[in-house]
Length: 369
Image (cartoon, rainbow, N blue to C red; front, side):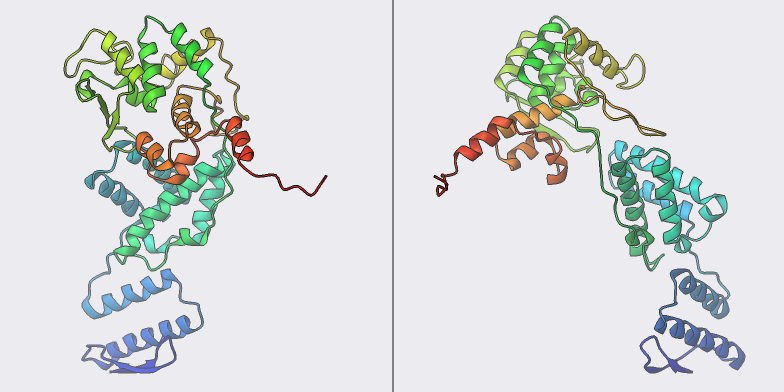
């Protein structure tokens, strides 16, 4: 039996389950040392795991199995896939983990996940910023790493999450601008007779992203039920939307397709980015429609300088038109497929006239005459 003061200062007695005095004494001294450090606030996560590992080896001859940081992060990706996480989500997480492991180095990546320190995480986050990553992207990276380590914490592999000690950065990102109604009309006129005309109409009436729009087939359209069903790659959740009258009339004017026949054949299956991609092609359509698209602030390193208007602005247009028509936020979120108020707020751009109307509803105060 070992008799010592625990982390609260209370005298306790515990069985070491050892029959040899010398071995029992080792365990008793380790317990006492850990309790003393805990009372003094000096028992770190790494030290705790070290004590457990030594006691287990002494008691059973077996080593305490704590996964490496690399295995933990890769395991988190596997778990996301196994639980039905969207492929796009895994694609966003993987490079974050790759950069973190590269930052801490091969030796530390292969060490126990319990040894990851606050300073290592903070150093990586600072390196991300130095490489040109925005505050928003740095916060995303920290959040993804925090989630993976929280999963390890729930499994009992770590006692504390080092990410919890690091505060998020103030975010600054280029504001994406919605198209005006006259902009959309100009795009439709310029794209007449091409698949881009239908693409613009679909985006402005459903808010679908470029890749999701390009992937539509006639199977997604139910003219009888007047619905369009799509599964956005970002969320991997089916989204059923009513077909607005103007969009329904346009689709009815097209040669009817069946099943997996592409809704817009010239756009279907093509990449969105890089030279020759759909994004650049839409940019040229904007130029022909004489729609100005100023570039955002200059970026350094991995930061990407973007234009304030692009195909994605049609999603902002969709949400903003609903908001300016006084459609409730809950209905707007359902139509756009947004899960959070924070995400939805970034797409809502109220017209200045709505502010004027709001002020007009207030009564005069008087007293100044």
